[in-house]
Amino acid sequence: MSGFKLKGPWIISVYGAVAAYEWALRAGIGWLIEHRRQPYVAVRFLSAFLETSIPTALFFMAVSLMGPRDALGSPAFLLYFFFILLSILRLDVRLCWFIGLVAAVEHFIFMSVVIGTLEPELQASFWRTPVFNLSRSLILFVAGLVAGLVAREIRRQVELSLRTVQARDRTIRSSVNTSHRKSLKSCSISPSISAANCATSA
Image 1 (cartoon, rainbow, N blue to C red):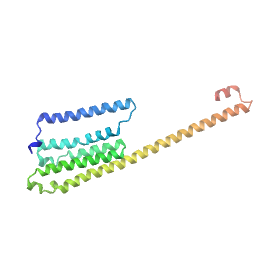
Image 2 (tube, rainbow, N blue to C red; image 1 turned 180 degrees about the vertical axis):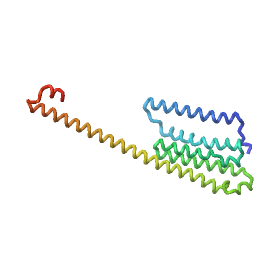
Image 3 (tube, rainbow, N blue to C red; image 1 turned 90 degrees about the vertical axis):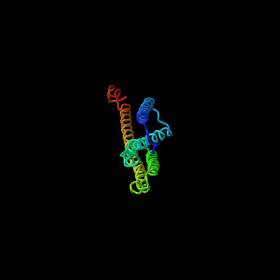
Image 4 (cartoon, helix red, strand yellow; image 1 turned 60 degrees about the vertical axis):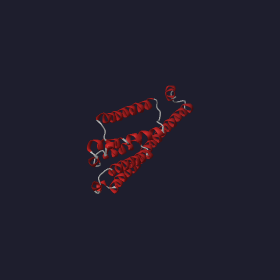
């Protein structure tokens, strides 16, 4: 497992790279909001891929710090669900499914590599077998699918609310315009209405 051994400066560099990426991402989002522009689709998927890879990097760091046996049970696995849940806020079904797929594939590759380095007697444990590895990866993928369905439903409800508000606004404007035209018509055909009232209606 010498290939997994990371020295202290490398670990600090990984944390620094993650922090710098998140800062750059925040600055980029602020620029897009300020200029009222939408990010390119490829950029959104690239950003999602990099963010979903953070738990995988932490897994390899855990191997270096704790050893492969303990790293396989590291709570870093739960971070995948954190990014999958955050993907719902983007209201993009494809992006949610993509994040779930990336998390599942990366976790499967990591577990397969680490399990292959264990002693045969340790590999015999059920939670270190490929079957257990595949089941955990499938859970991540299914979580991505569910997140996509939730995001689609939220987006549908938001769009429905916007259409309802727009329809109500059109109804109100139509009612105001109709009332205004009737008022002007009354001024033109009824001499008993004062000029001040007609001027106000106009």
